[in-house]
Image (cartoon, rainbow, N blue to C red):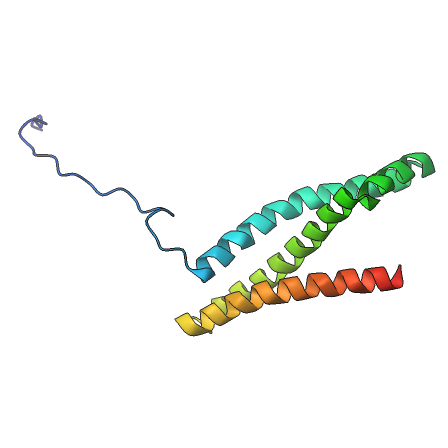
Length: 136
């Protein structure tokens, strides 16, 4: 096998792999990114739920302390975000499930599903919190 002389072969400038800076951000693309972000956020939120359950098992003093954190304005904001992440991720998963069947892949219908995912997640989150406050 002959040695290849790198000086004898002209190097062409190879294009870089396209990334987010190259593409125009589309609504469906942003909703897919939010789907991934909410999936990661659900891990953190689930750890908070586990912490609350462990506090409930640890006794009333520790439970009251943890419950006080979750009952503060910041704790409720975090819980509201957790609720939204759960609803958005659920509806985003349902959107992807519809696409897996080969349906609603046209641009207009995909945009409609993406908008419905956002509107539905916000609406369900507000409905859950309104019901929660009405019952509690």
